[in-house]
Image 1 (cartoon, rainbow, N blue to C red):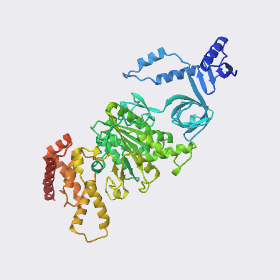
Image 2: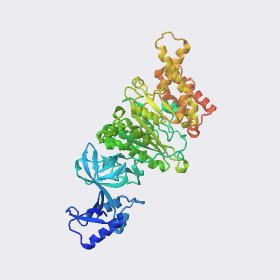
Image 3: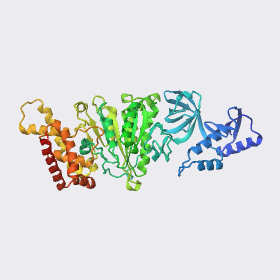
Image 4: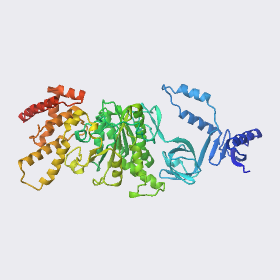
Length: 578
């Protein structure tokens, strides 16, 4: 009968009684006879170390200390005072005979480590290197695993020891993260001290099933007239923001965050591959406007390693899921998933995976689908919380048919396409009416907004089409000229300065006035002044309109008539002041 070969290491050989105890334990554990092979090892102090293939039982002083450290790291104090809990745990703690799979590093470089000897390692499992650096299993091969590193690889070299932890990757979560700026691992980087976590969230978790969801029917207003009137976003929706570089994609997401002030919505902004200066400027804007009171910024800068850029969106999603499962509404912005895909491509190529289209790996679709599918409006049985996702994707020369854009368009519930020509012409937000869509539609609008927006999208589409044809003709009839003037007025109406989101009643008042042709004869250049004046006039002279719209969310025929009357009264005053 073959005996199980076991290597026993220590500074001094075991006595006969210790040897019999080891043999009895191993025979009971593995059901076979064992052959103990003694090897003196000066690094194993204060005990012994048993090695059975890749499994290790470490009863040395260092092994017992690491076991106690792991036990303490899992403590979750409920009342905020951790000292009594630590004392009780240390007093009652006894070391256990726990086997750890250990391996050794074959090679390391570019944020990737190849490890041998971990026969039972699982995909997504956290590995702990002897230097204290942690990594995550990303590639499983015969006899070795590929691991991405979350720390400095300078302390890791070929031959370094590495062991399994049995845990999947995650990040600390809790209410204290609101108002803070953290990195992809949940560590604070805003200089305000440590953050006390309320729990631990897995960065990879299954999306809620159909039974756990309910329809998306509650509006999440962005404060942008062009979006809320034509491409409404509901709580639990995934709406893509797509366009070329420097066309205002981040500005739309930022305005949406600012508009959530006072609406009990937690906002999470995930920066992937952005410049540190850009993120600092955005964070300062949020802080200056009081939005950091309900916002968390998760950062993986352009200078960070590709593994951190890869996990940053999942870390932000884990934090968002914590709030969603608590029954709260969450808005999460991924800025942007183009750089996220590039970081994943770099990792995949370094791991030796076969490149596919545009050198991306074959599972790049799954990369984003398993992230965005976690956005949902949970059922009442699950608490009724929601996570609304606004992923951002950058295009090249407006090409929405490229690989990554088409992948994400097929995952999301609609897209807001920003056009460079409109942006440079001064139309901001530069929303392309024809290519943008919301697949939730009117279900995510209040009754007042739904009724007020009417046929604005159809009118704008007719104007854009007519504008193309009329640029080749100098002789226009009065009806065509009037239609073009009306369309130009609507385009001016949709122009909105950054960081100035509109409230619901303000949007309804402007839409009713425009669609009732109140501002038909105004020159386009004066419509901006007319909008601001009309809103101020309505607030001062007819406050019942604003109050009723905000309280009921319904636009009655009487209320519409009051709005039109107020708008015409102000128009007469506006023209008289000219």
